[in-house]
Image 1 (cartoon, rainbow, N blue to C red):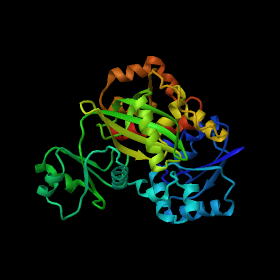
Image 2: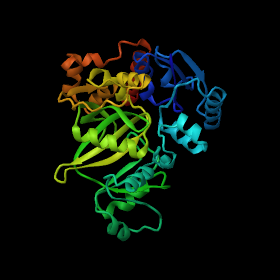
Image 3: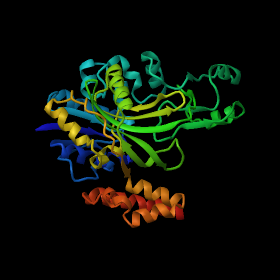
Image 4: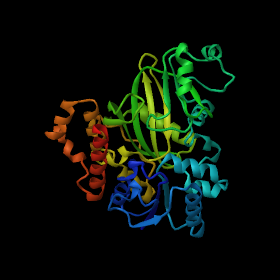
Length: 376
């Protein structure tokens, strides 16, 4: 039996709820370590729950003890949220432990983990196309920034996700007001804003090798283009396949990654915007595409990770996250979108997690709570 330990520090991070199901479908024995209220517990597809808290010291100590007491018991340890990755990345100095727990094999590239400035520096190191950037400091004035970057720009807090901690600055006159909104200026990234087609994708790597992936055209965002997405149209691309193969080898990616590119059509350049070396909510929904991540996990279990040379599929598949999209429809008064769910448009009902009453129950409670807060 292939033993997997799924790890989550932040209990309110709902993207972890359906990940155990993805591993179970691949034939794994699934243990989880998290706090009692964690979304990672809200499913019927884990074998053992190891209780901890969200206190970083207790969490780190317990996880390291589990690994060090029986190093070979777990075939794969998967950190599911950015906070857990950041904590363990800052705590581990042993290369052996690093490769066992963290989702990259090249320890020299550890700055890419849960850091916006780290990603930008890694892109610079390997010549990966990314928007021009500077690391902001109090010494930078508007004129200095104008000499280095063309407006509009984005202000990105170093540790942020789901669009939180990103400010859009249209022109230099608005820079100070945007800076005033930044809660943490440590390692703040100022980055040129590129107009183009947003490409969201999920990928799985093993020892730097690309195992499988899905990339998508973004159909709807929850709030704006810097927030999380609710509907996507998935496809495959020869260009994206090539980019991911190079990225995986250069960085040493070793696990799941949530990645974002933007394609500038006139320049025909794919700019890398984001690499979060963790799972996301969309990965469990890969079962509705031709590139199921459970199949990718099976390839890793069987040691068959070197055969992603088949031509990219021309088929595109529309996928929606049930609760996210319903909340978007209500927020933006998208009555057409609501009717699509009511009338099972394109078979949307298959995206409702009826397969697991625990996931469905907590999801419905969350939706009802959100709606009650909106009406109160």
